Image (cartoon, rainbow over all chains, first blue to last red; front, top):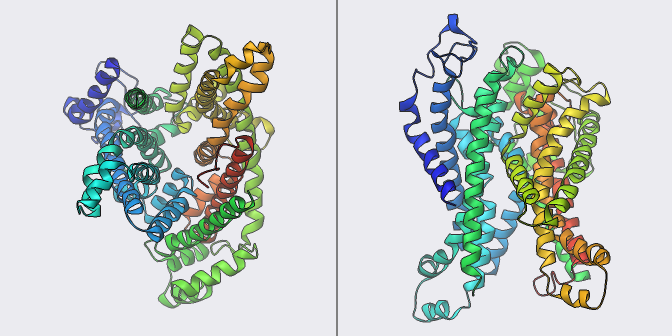
Length: 264
Length: 312
């Protein structure tokens, strides 16, 4: 558990300080030095335009991790709001909200995101929109389910009798009981968002050049697979390490939540 | 039971109508002028306004949303996918060719996934917490974190570039399917291993097992008749998620390996703004997905009668 936290703190530092640690400008083109192997000058080598790969990786951390964070928080807010509305509203609101959720769930998330981002035109905003709009459903389902399960508990009934409005009950009684489960889902979705962003980047629908993003770096590297295979290893490795660290944190969190809930 | 099935079917129909509206709305609201894009793709030249208007009328883009939706949905319900606005060819034959490349790949990947994960989970749960178990969990966690496109590139690098054992690009021979199937299959295996493993461990803790054991039933039969069915329940549950994972992976893997399957069909459709191609793939995906999830819900109720008794 502790080692996992250390890893997460490292990731946050990486996204925060990474760009400052970068030895070069990530967009500086240096044609004479193109596709050079790792050396003391360029620790991880250079890409097809002679840009320093290490600098691009470090700057890319901000794009990949930052955008993934943004996307997962936006979908958390959307999903929780929809789930709570379903639990608070009447039968019709509940039915509408849940069938809408089912409808969005009918598309595999990444396939839908690819279509949306592709049709909206490649760019950071359509990337954020595409991944948020396809990522909120799990939160909505869990938020609704847990809210319904505490609806008839004594303290909620009492709050209702005391005249608390629906949204106040949601704020003070539903939301606190949602937090553990939603946090666990959020870690999973954060990792998924990193994978999604780099997948869209790899297809050319995500963050646009010359901005360094891990997925689009892989796309660049793919062409030079034969001549400089190492170039392709680094961005993928960055994605794997981040996703692994976040997933392990999620597992640890889930176990902690399960352990806490068990004695009940 | 009949009522439950009816309810599930009704729900699936509602969801399918929703997906149709959503799909159409998405393409309808896509930025840019689709008529211009289609005209450009068709004539490959700079065009005057009236040519574009003519295309607009021809494709039916000059109507308002709901009539246009009706024009689209009507033929779709008769399983008529219409013509590609870009190539002018009917959509279905091209789509069928693409399916012909995608489905065998998906099944091969599922097969590889099962063939690897079941033995791995069985070996791992022999001694929970033991060295093999930890190894299996670590491999599975790692496998879950590796993106399909990166794994695909690495496999190309090793088996096609360095060792030159297998072809990397295209789909001419069955050998071309090995690397893509392996790429997808390893991902499937990683997530299935975790699920089967925890399913087995959970089933082992069931309180009725000591009772059966004390009645003198041998371990083999307990494993086969009591633990295996219990461990299968979570596997059935996550099959829907597994399918989503496969479909997502397929798009990327097909693009990497240059296989002319559904994923490539979709991405090319998006790039060419070929709306009828994109719509066809999206609707097909949703249809497969909803049907499989409906089937899962039903199978689930058959193999585990406890489910759905009080919360249909």
